[in-house]
Length: 490
Ligand code: NAD
Image (cartoon, rainbow, N blue to C red; front, side, top):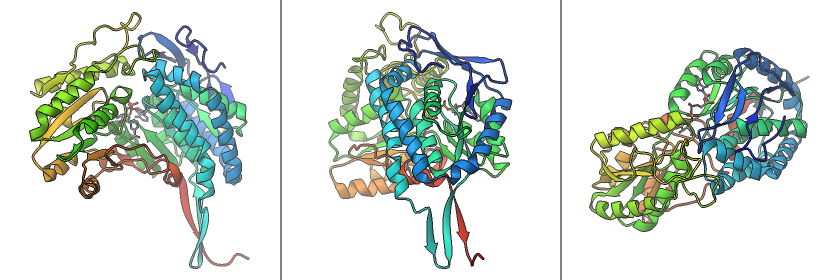
């Protein structure tokens, strides 16, 4: 099985096997799923449409491997993960090209965001695991932290490698075994991971890969009585469904779901900087980022100035072929998603919001070859009502809503008024004020005056943005059970 074609945009990356129990083997079904290039709309790959029987086989392999894998030392397990990270690092540029072709992320961003950080984080797991107290004395008890068991790993398409590596890194480091079901829209990098798992020499059954649709393979994994935990990244609606099904077997779930994050710009902020950073955040990966700051909350008196600054920044975007290094905004990941996003834009216009820039029509001046791609113009609305559909529903595309507020109290109320609670930001030149507002936001993370992602800090959502946390020690804890041992043996 080849890794990534050198020229993935010329050939088709055909994967006709699933990876179960340490072997590449055919799916029990004959179905296949086409994978499309985001910028061209052409088929770039093909994967097995796995079945419930494939899921069962993979779960059995993972169950069988669990006792041996969990009995190994953490250092041993992390050693294999470090070798996996090193192998991925050697293929980093191939992986970036692959993800750019599949998802549409501009190539420079793919290298910086899609590929480098998850490999770095996996390589850094050794230090995180070393600092863990897997057992500690609490009074008369010995408290043990033990792996939860077999974990089903179900991921989305927007940061495909990051999600797979983040989840399997924490799961495998703690001693869990995994069955991975990547998104059928961007599954190819998961095959590259499986190739390396095979090369590095993980014991059979520790890592299994079954591709297919959510309702067929995903639901089977979630329902399976031998799966102890589901770790999921995806939409809130799918997360609800997974939670319901998982509850039937009282499974643990870790759910990383949608967001509608607020960028609260206070009246004493550096407005230009707040808008520059806020826009960059909102439009990264064409807005297909769960933590995107898609609601910009601004003092009503500053609206005209804000609108000018927003328009000027959006006009700078170079929409085009994501493999071209000068492109700053690529296409969306699928035709269906592009159509959904355009519908949201039409709805915003119908709801009476002011269109500052962009719109539902396809962008003009796309290069040859991109006519069939899934492009949407970078779009900003202003004077959006806080309860409008475009201000409350996750759009997951290059669309910003500027929402005016009267005072700090109202800004906090608007920021907290959606069902989501993933991320947020505050801009103010007064640290006390910025901290006060940050503490009042009901979200899993808040950036003050712009900041960098900290991979050791917890990542996850309040409210309907999710359950549980990823990254660093917090990510490991999701995969650990607690056992209290008392009394005297023997
Ligand atoms: P999705 O929910 O459609 O699909 C995600 C995964 O779930 C896919 O692998 C899919 O096949 C599978 N799936 C679908 N139905 C299923 C079912 N009934 N049972 C089991 N599995 C099922 O999400 P998507 O469109 O791929 O991704 C976009 C969404 O992901 C957005 O809402 C975004 O906010 C969210 N997201 C969240 C985070 C986070 O960390 N919080 C990160 C990235 C993306």
